[in-house]
Length: 113
Length: 115
Image 1 (cartoon, rainbow over the protein chains, first blue to last red):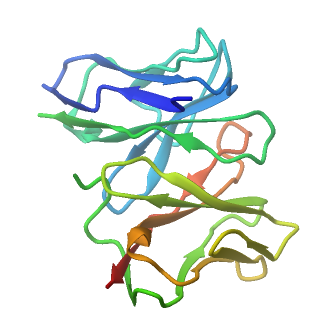
Image 2: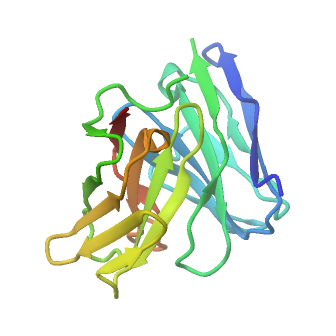
């Protein structure tokens, strides 16, 4: 199993550009989520999904869109990038059942200039 | 490259010593807690978890202690090795704005193991 795969690993955008961060998992996990990691602030939840066709907002959803058309994929879209979105983004998934740990990808480092 | 901040609290220990990393969690409604390890340039890696009906849980070289009275969690690493050098995060599962539970993370502690 590859686990959780994120692409790209690095990305530089100009302010106002759009892009999609890709996330795929091969563990048949129903639950998927996106976090951003900023210095000194730990990981903060952006959006999450409890299954195909279902998405919901986390702590810091503004400026980001998600969709979940399949169990495997959970892309994160930035419609108009801003410097405040410079961060490292992590996708994570877990099996159903409330008490199960998240499995993380290796992240996408995004810089917005 | 660095994937976490430069101003994290740091615990420095000698190789072979035991390490104790502490975490104060914020939400008394949380009932599931996890410790993660993050090495530079990688995503967080699951170490051990504990449910609120337990006070202690042991894994291989690691022990998690939970004190619900003071909302405190600790991770003990026995016989610390250079490969244990990383940033360690605790996470809890409070209800968030949507009414569902979601994992929320502390800001992390950097463990440095001196040879």
